[in-house]
Each structure stands twice: as structure tokens, then as C-alpha cells.
Length: 184
Image (cartoon, rainbow, N blue to C red; front, side):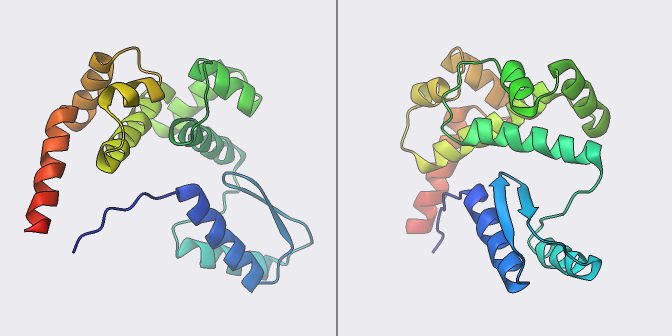
């Protein structure tokens, strides 16, 4: 039997971080998505142990300032796309305000480090969200387009096809066939 799961990555990561910090008896505070404040002094050995325990789950401790900002940009974009933040702000304004840097600076840094633009990264994340919502099958394509601030269903469909090679309808048909094959 195949199960389709709706994952809340933020909650999963938060739980893993809490468990690992508690196992090491660290006094900590989770400040937000991808940011933890260790309240007391920690030895290098204990920090290394935490790093190794988190690495098992694909979570890395970042130390380079540019890498930290890049991760904050990615986390903010994922939060913007995957949570139900009702933002009528343009993504450039939202990112600049949330990260306290000019959009020009974060855009140039992001492109320099990741070899892709922030705009392209946002599109990729939005299409991942569209796929997730199509899998859950609770919203129409029109509702999904509205939820993700697309100007129209046609705009969403064009971006979806450019990224996945499939139209949203073809994606839904494939998912439907897979579900039907499993139930037989």
C-alpha cells in the first residue's frame, strides 16, 4: 500500500533539532525557521557532536556569513511559498524587509553563490507547492493560482509546464492513474 503524505518540513526539522539539543542537554531557543540560539557556552566537542547528530537528518550548521544569508534567503522563500502568509507585497519587497538588506544586494549574492536567480528559485518552489497541492487534491487549479498569487491559471500552467515538462492536467492524470493502479 502506498501512502501519500502531507509534510510540514518546518515542524519536522524543529522536532529533530529539539530532540538532539535535549539529548545533549543544551539550553536552546528556536528563533525561527533554520535558526537556533544556544543560550549557554558550548564546548567545541559538544558543538561537533550536535553537528554530527543533525547531519544524519540532512541538517547542517552553517558558519560562513554569506552561506548563512543564502540559507536565510532560501528559508524565507520557502516560508513565503509553503506557509499561508497572505502577502500582497512583491517578493522582492518582502525579502528585503524580512532580511534587512536591499533586494539588489541579496539578489546579486544569491545569483553569485547559487548560479540561479532568486526569481527562478521562487518559481521552482512555487511549482513544488503546486505539485503538493495537486497531490492533496483539495483545491482547484484556479484556487491554487489565487493562493500562490499567480495572475491567472494560464500563467501558472505555463510555468508548471516549463519546469516539469507536463501541464498541471497531465500531472493530475498521471497521479490519478498511479493511485488507481495501487488500489487495484
